[in-house]
Length: 231
Ligand SMILES: [Zn+2]
Image (cartoon, rainbow, N blue to C red; front, side):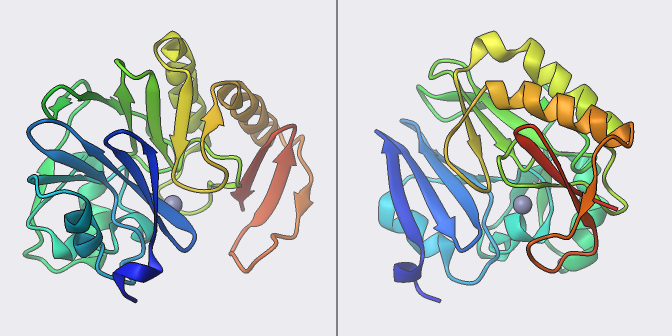
């Protein structure tokens, strides 16, 4: 895959989304450096794409360590993520891969553009969101999406997921727009309440198991405006 096979869409001045088949990465530019959020499946050279957009130093941050978000990490010197993702990350990466921690409340300062790290365990234990207070944008990774949220497997916890969504709901006077990694872009803040309601119904067994539209080792559960893959 070459650069031409990525779809690069300018969101606003100094913000781009980089669409890699089923998942998207983001690039945000400040006066000093750029923030790359995730690296897709790693099918092509996303570093090349980034360097075609900016010459500034790149800070790579992963919203979480799922393979569709870290596939191109090897092209960069170092990746930042929450340490609760490390063990899962190293299951699929060379032992000498360099990672650095991002903690709850850390501020990523790009120069005249800042993002705050918010820990939102549930989809994975070290999933993070990034809050751009000045521009009222939340980058939500896989935790908020109109497409089904993957909630099956070892690293997931629906209970923690609901608590994390409640946490984001409590912060929702700080943002108007949510940037998800999958599905329609962008989404509104009302999706948070729909996902909370849907996840609670999922736990209470009130949703009916449906066959997923593609092969995935789980069933699909659909609530009003929210959907999940869950066993
Ligand atoms: Zn994903």
